[in-house]
Image (tube, rainbow, N blue to C red; front, side):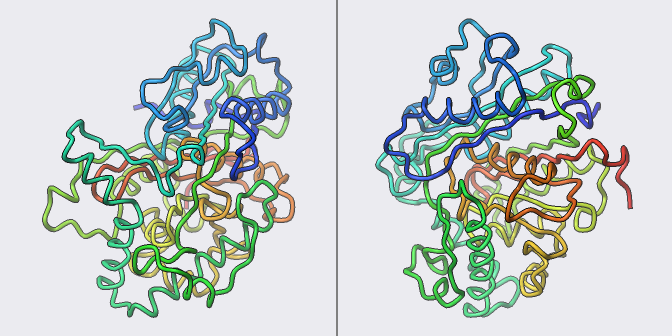
Length: 408
């Protein structure tokens, strides 16, 4: 099987401010993100963009909407545009599909975008729909929302690794404190406010043991990327970013089918991560990655992701949290822009927002949160709920001066 490694480059990106954008439509957000990307890459959308992929889940309050989510606001007349919907992994999956088309030689320059207007839906949480067209399942999902499922993962994790509720909540609280701090350094983040560990632990409960500050908020926003073949990237800029590896994994409800499913790992994350590492030639991600932007929909999710992606040994994520290993000045900074928790989570835009953060970090343009000389970074999206209907995408991005082979 061939690898995507170093065959596709990102030469421009854009991202709106995330938040409650009552004064903007999804089309307005698309225009803002895409025109930042066009300007960043120095391209003309009518002349240079040959095809596009757009990710959106709930912006039109219905499935089945078309690529016109992109073509109408951008006036991209009669170009091939594909709409991608893969729940929270939609944005990264759109990038993945576009990258494969470019690597195959079908196009030279394409646009990838993700957009969501969740606040207009009126839902306090995600407007869940069933993965299976079964009215009984749909009804069940309306009463069994995401915080409940991830709270079950948290209680199981505490039990499995012999953490008292107090100790477990303290570890999760430290993750929230870290991400809130990073969010204060991100001008486009939805929530830019420091919190203390005491505030997190004593916050109103959403689904025990997950309190208010353990849960990401719903947001509006959009993000976009311009990608091209690697050999053409120097025609656009010197500080382009290469795609080093892509991995995707979709589950089949093993959590419901297997009575011994442990709920302290997400198999979709494990397998998608392994696929991306194999393409990038990475055998020790803890040492080789310079940053990671992961899907912290809840603090427990981030903790489990540390272990699923090989950043921490199984059951040892808490030690790395305590040591500050994942902070901005730690050995492997995670969620440098505040993550879903603070940057916000407009579902289909989040994956490309993560790529935007790694892109800026690798270029040395991340402002107050800039890391020292990062060369390779990872993004991770997990859609669905633990063990039920989950899908995961992992992308690994690197600077062009990064070695061709990354080995221990």
